[in-house]
Image (cartoon, rainbow, N blue to C red; front, side):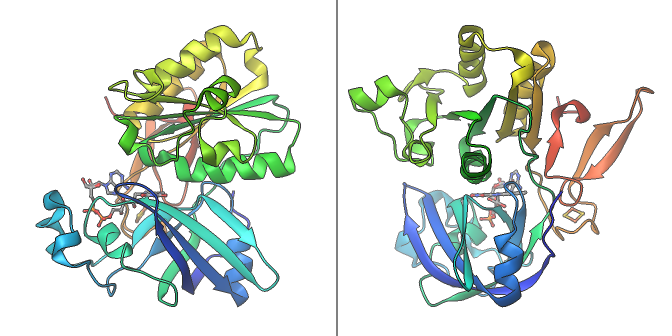
Length: 312
Ligand SMILES: Cc1cc2nc3c(=O)[nH]c(=O)nc-3n(C[C@H](O)[C@H](O)[C@H](O)COP(=O)(O)OP(=O)(O)OC[C@H]3O[C@@H](n4cnc5c(N)ncnc54)[C@H](O)[C@@H]3O)c2cc1C
Ligand code: FES
C-alpha cells in the first residue's frame, strides 16, 4: 500500500524530451509537501495530471491520425505512473514516460521547462517488494514499462541481492519506449535495454513482427526463459504492466507454474480516487466462486494476479 499522503500539488516542468517517434519523458519538480509526498511514491502508484489548459502543438506537428481527436476538449485529468523518482535536498523530481495517443498526451508534448501543471497524487497502491524471493521478472508490454523501471531502481537500491530480469515487448521495434543496444557485446551480455542496463539488469526484447529480439509475444519469450532458467518457482516473482491480454497470459503462466505474480491494470479512469466507479475491475472472492468489483484507481492499479477475473 502507498504510504505517502496524497494531495493536489503544483509541479514545475524541468524537462520534456522526445525519446522516440511518439514517446517522451517529462520531468516534474515538486517542492514542499509535494516533494515529501512524491518522494515517498511507490513504484506502481500514479497521479492524475491536469492538461486542460496546456496548448496543442501546431497542426503540422500533430500526427495525421490524431488530427480529429486533437480537437477534443480535455475535461478530465489523465492518469500517469512514474518511471523514476529522485529525492534531492529540497525537491523531488518525478519522471513520466509517456506515449502520444490522444488529445491530452498530445498537449503534454508542448510543456517545457518553466511551465507548471497541477498534479493529484500519489494515488493507488504500488507493487509489493519481492521479500524472500531470489529473482524478480519484470514484464512490460508496450507502454507498460514506466512503473517497472521505477520498480527496477527500487529493488536494486533496497534489495541488491535480488536478481532482476526484464522482458519488454511491443508490436514493432519503433513502439518499444526504449533505446536499444543492439551491438554484439550488449546482446551477448543481455544488456539490451539502456534503461535497465543502467541498473545492470539483463533484458530481453520481443516484437510481434520480429523487427527486434524474439519474434512473438513477450509472454512467450518469458515462457522460453522460464523453461531454460533452472530456477525454483518459489524463488521467482513476476511483475507485469501492459495490455490486459498480456497480463491475463502472465497470470495464466504464473498460475500453471505456481509463481507469485503482481500486475498493474490499466483501466480508463475519471476521478482517480474511488468515487465515480468508472474503473471497476472484476475480482474473485475467497472460495465461493462469486465475484466482486474493485476500483482500479483505489484498490489497485496493482493486484495479485490470482485475484483478478480477466476479460475474455
Ligand atoms: C494507472 C495508469 C497509469 C498510466 N501510466 C501511463 C504512463 O506511464 N505512460 C503513458 O503513456 N500512459 C499511461 N497511462 C495511460 C494514459 O492515462 C493514457 O494514455 C492517457 O490518459 C491518454 O489520454 P489522451 O487524451 O492522450 O488519449 P485518449 O483519447 O484519452 O485515449 C487514446 C486511446 O488510448 C486508450 N486509452 C486511454 N487511456 C487508457 C487506459 N487507461 N487504459 C487503456 N486504454 C486507454 C483510449 O481507449 C483511446 O483508444 C496510464 C493509465 C493508467 C490507468
Ligand atoms: S477512476 Fe473514479 S472510481 Fe476509479
